[in-house]
Length: 391
Ligand code: SF4
Image (cartoon, rainbow, N blue to C red):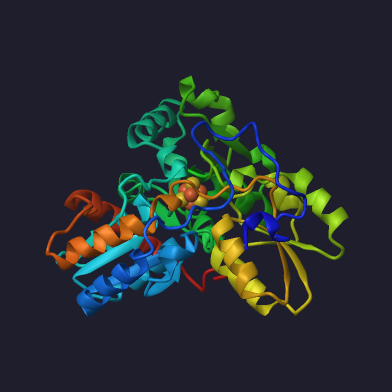
């Protein structure tokens, strides 16, 4: 069935003139070019046996996810990789920062492969180390650096995680952001501030909606403006210094569509990821990580109606897996994560067949010092008290 025929898009198929340049949203994904690819992927996987462990992020295409030994969000997948010390090769069907995290958490003898090196993440790319170091110096010039704890979302490059590691900070996921922020706010006394990287929306939604900070206590650091576009006074008054980064997929959902769907679908419940804009999250019924979204739909009663604000591959898969529930996509524009979709069957087969032939292609390797410092920030997260919220 074509995606345009699905009730997944109850408001019809629109387009968005604000789409990022280069992000085309054509609708259906094209079928794999070679019908033999499925058999070739399976043959390569069989030939490699226990030597390879294939990880598939929830936002991957069906044609790739069918070969995953385990599926999950970025943190779950990194943990799964770490729990397979016998696998010589970890083939990561996800994006670059995830493969870096897997390399950091796996043994030296294990090799992590990303089937297409162009599978980056626009959010992670919005915080470059040089920009963050410039911001850190500016915080010192403003006289507030000693009060600031850097916290980075898992969706960041290894060198940003390492920056947090060497500056007393921590990594967080969308499942445990509140716990990580609570920990961070205790580190420098009552005047502690947090520099939250790189997703302003996750930082704002967690601080305001889960922890009771006000919007006035949040400021946005724009790395493209002198001093982040902020005065020393604004920095001094702030508790949350939010990096001006966002997810190009989750940032698209709008409060207007929430209103329209509520008017169109009786009893619909709006379920969104915390990477969505604050105005969208405010209008939602439930907010949580991809794992939370999956569990919520699994537990939902037959006949219930849901509009979901997360990546379309996952929403479409949930709709296919739960035909007894009414599942819609929270956008008029059919738009996948363009970088996640770089991992397609031809790239997967190429990576796997290369391994069968003894050639490791597209290895992702994080240098030793970055690994060690990033691991400090990751370990602080693993040591956080209690069960992660909504995990
Ligand atoms: S969905 Fe957003 S955060 Fe995830 S990989 Fe794509 S751009 Fe990055």
